[in-house]
Structures are given as C-alpha cells and as structure tokens.
Length: 313
Image 1 (cartoon, rainbow, N blue to C red):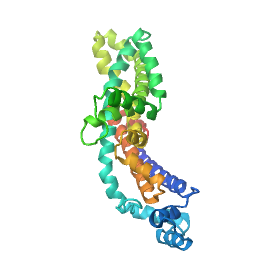
Image 2 (cartoon, one colour):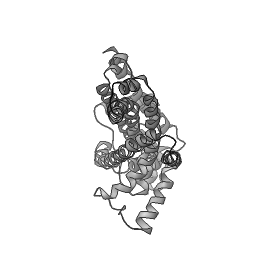
Image 3 (spheres, rainbow, N blue to C red):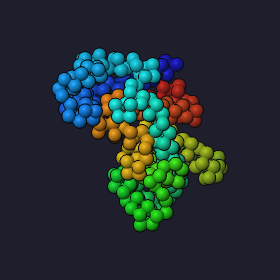
C-alpha cells in the first residue's frame, strides 16, 4: 500500500511538472499571444486594443498567478475557451479525441500483431536468415521519420496504386495507412526488445528445469518463457500510448485527420494558449493512464512485482 501511495504521489508530481513546463514554454515565446489574437480579430490592431486584449486574457498578471488560476479551473473541468474556434477547449477535445484514440488503438493493434510472432520466430531461430532480415528491417523502421514514411505510403497506396482512401475520415479503412505509419517505429523497437527478453529467459535455469521435467518445447515457450517476457513489453506499450498520441500530430497532418494532434498544431501556429495548455494536459493524463494500466496488467501477470514495489510509476 505504501508503494502504491508513493506511485500516486509520483504521478501527481509528474502531471504538475508537465503542465507547469508546458505553461512556461508557451508563455516565454517571443510571439505575444495577445498581439497574435488581436491580429486575427482586427487585422491591424492598435496598441490600445492589444493592451485591452492582454488584460481581458489575464496575460498582464504574473505567470505563477496565471498558472494557479488555470490549474484551479482545470481541476473543475474548465480548460478555457479556444481563441480560434470560440468553443470551449474541453468540447473541442471531446470531438477530436475519439479520432486520435481510434488511430492510436489501431496502431497498437498492429504493433501487437507484428511484435509477438516476429520476435518469437527470431528468438527461436537466432542468427538465421530471417533473424538477419528482421534485424535490418527493424533498424530501418526505428530510424525512419514518420513524415517521410507517411508521404511515401501516401504516394504508393493513394496516388500510384489508389487502393485505400485516406483523405475523407469516417471509416476504419481511412485509418489503415496512418495507423501503419504510426506503428512502424514502435513495432520495430518492440520486436528488438521482446526478442532480447525472450533470449534472456530461454537461458534461465527454470527453462532447463522444465525440460528436465519432460515438458514440451512448445509449452515451455508459450506458457513460461513468453509470459515471463511480457512485462517489459507491456510497460513499453503503456509508455508509447501517450507518446503515440503526442506523435500523431504529424501523421494526422499528412493524412488530413482532424484529431487532437492536428488541433494542437493549429493552436501552436495561432498562439492559442488555452488550447495548447488543454491539449498538453489531456495528453499527459493519457500518458499517465497508460503507465498505470501497464502496471496493473503486469501486477496481474506477476503479483510479486507489487510486493517488491516494482513498476514504472
């Protein structure tokens, strides 16, 4: 219980740190948000109009007072009003978050589908031609930037060979290509990690003991080695959930998906502070939720982790 409370306190500190840093970074920019907003409204604003908007937005107060007020409002569920759409930030995020979550969910599904069988085959056939090919492919997959891969996939499967529609959002088919692009780097890293963990466990004493008991290789690999190799992989999935949501901005821009990532990019370009702070808070919450979920799954698989106080929280 003490370890659990420590982790909860750590999560709260993490959230406060992320929001404070985001708030600070958004406010120290050389671009005055009041002036940027005034130019959108008045085209050629006067100095008096900029000062009036700065006062109305509360930007004339010390930064710590702005942060405390924003934090208090956020705890009550009020993330402010978007300067671009004039809607509440919470309602805008509520409309766009399902698109991003579907994209990330499908990407994680691709990661699982590719990672477990490929890593198992490469671990059981170490140094085979298949293992070498997968090693090269995963190095390339982890190195390629998302935007380059996105444009390449778009050119091949939407222009040269128009197999899948990617422009209009509205069905799962339009998420296939962007989810694959988002999944490639994570799947590449996951395959390498899971293969290394499998090889480490295959050399453990309990595997020799299981063979001595006469258990089949299939049962040893599937029941014992695979299960004991899952915790690092699950933890990686939990960490990458928030990372993929934050990283979905580039993929959403390339494939014209109006999710949270694209909403955040538009807000940064327009210096829309309430939207920037609200999006960062939501992404940080999802990141923390992913780590908590990963810990819970690991604890269910191996209850001794709870006793030892292990976990990533």
